[in-house]
Every structure is written in C-alpha cells, then in structure tokens.
Amino acid sequence: MRKNKKFRGYFAPQLKMMLTEKRTLGFKYKEEERLMYIFDELSLKYNCNEGLSQKLVFAFIKKQPHWSQSTHEHRIFMIRSIAKYLNSHGITAYVCDTNRITKTIRKFKPYIFSKKQIEDILYQADTIPKTSRSKSSSLFYPVILRMLYGCGLRISEALNLKIKDVDLQKGLLYIYSSKNYKDRITPMDNSLTNFCINYFKQIHVASKNTDYFFKSPKSGGKYNKSSVYHYFRKLIWQCGISHGGRSKGPRLHDLRHTFCVHSLHQFLKNDVDYRAALPVLSFYLGHSNIAATGKYLRLTAEAYPEILNQMEQNFGHVIPDLGVIKDETY
Image (cartoon, rainbow, N blue to C red; front, side, top):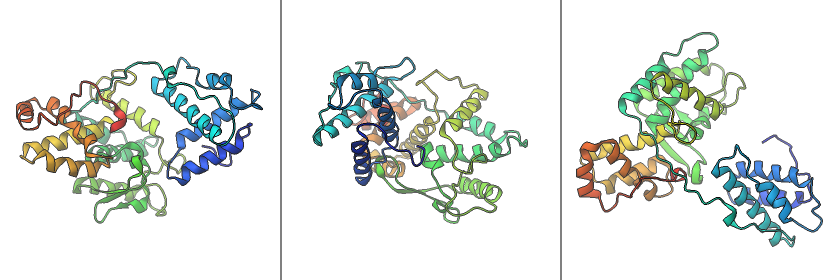
C-alpha cells in the first residue's frame, strides 16, 4: 500500500478509525486495507449523504470475469464488515446477505512432490546459468527453495526474514508475526545453514541487520512473491512436471505441504506415535492447532501406499477424509 495515502470519500473518518482499531487489536489487515481504499474511491461516485446504500454495496461486490471465487467472497465479507462498523457508529448502512456468495464448492488437493522430484527441482535451481543478468537468481533460488522445503516455511515467512532473524551460527530462523499472529523459532539442518552462509557472504557484503536476508537486487527490498512463483513454475517445467492450470498446482506453497508429508512419513516409518509426532510438527509449522497438522495424515497415506494398511489400523480413527480440503487451514 502506497505510503501517505488517505481516505477521501464520505466515510473516510470511519474507515480510518476502523483500520486503526483493527491494527490495535493485532490484525495485519493488509489486503483488507487495499479493499477499503478501493471502496473509498468507488464511494466518490455515489451520493452517500444518507449512508451506505444497497446500490453502492452491489457495485462494490459485482463479480468481474477475472475474479476467483475467493476474491468475490473476500469483497462480500469486507463490505459486510464496513457496513456493520458504520451501523455501530450511527451511520445507516446496508448489510448484504452472505447468500449472495455463489454456492460452489472449492476443491483443492495439495500436490505432494516425490523425493525424486524435489531432487530434480533443486538440481535445476543449482544449475541456473551464472550470467550477469541471472547472477542473483543463481544464488537466490537454490537457497529459498531449500528453505521452503527443508523448513516448511510459507513463502511470505521466508521473504520477510531480516538478516537479524537468521542466526547462521546456531542455524536458527526467527519467524515473527506469521499467520495466526504466531512467532516461532525454526531450526535448519547443517546443509541448509551452509547454503545460507554462502549466500550471505556473496550478497550481504555491506548490509545492515535490518535489511532483508533475501534482498532484491532491483529494489533493495524483498523479492516479490509472484516473481518467485513464476520462476518456480519455470523450474518445475524444466523437470517435466506439468502445471494443472489455475488453482490446481503444483504451486510454490506445495513445497510446504510436501515437507509436512515427508516429515510425517519419516516419523511413522520410524515407529514414532502420531500423538507425539503431530504436536512437534504442528509447533514447527506454526499451525494454530494440531487438527490442522493432523489433516496431513491422509495425504501421507496416499503418498506412501506401502504404509497405508499400517496407518489405517493404527490411526484410522483420527485420519480425516481428505478427498478435498480447504487450503486456508495450512
């Protein structure tokens, strides 16, 4: 969001107060802030002297051809929140019914890479040509992909790391204000730590502790998530892994899913009780509860059929049916 941007519409004071209150309560409200500014600009085209009208609400949530289902839902939930806030402050506002959300079932199943595919992806990253144009890419991708898979990080968590958050002596990553507003400490194995040390020596010759660990060579800030994702798609294509299309993957976030499944498989193969494995993995991943981690049990069984019978016998009562799942849980 552009700095110093201000709300300009009729509801500007209320939007400003609402945003401040949410941030005070600890909500990040980044995407919500963006939508609030879009709503604010749209409101300039309407007469709002009598409050938030149905006409303005419907204009804000009118589904566009390029919108995904989640984008449409987010708009509806956002305008409902604004309307309720306005009503609570004595301003008449139309609260749209959630029934306006199209009743479609979003089916999503994570793509779990095989260990051979992970090896192939890392090989492609390690062999990125070291030309003048791609020098930063040849250093960045071997490390970031190993970190996403080796530590199960979300891409935003990795890109938000500052130099002070990466302890190269102890091999620890300090993750702050992640999803669900959780902080955690994530250990790296020696191999990943050595990759990070090599990367640091070549990239951060004269950097400050407050600089991003993965500093973009173009802006000096952090890398753009979309750029990383698109380059990742190029790498998996080179590995012969085809993409299923929009919302079907494989996606960059599937490296996190794969880390979890591979870790659970290792636990179970070594006869570690799932009741001991899940809390450890849940804490490591920064999940809000163990139930979120437990959903990987079915995926683990599907990825490793040889232990399916063992899992059904020992853990069948706790394995959920994951024919489809909601990705937000992870």
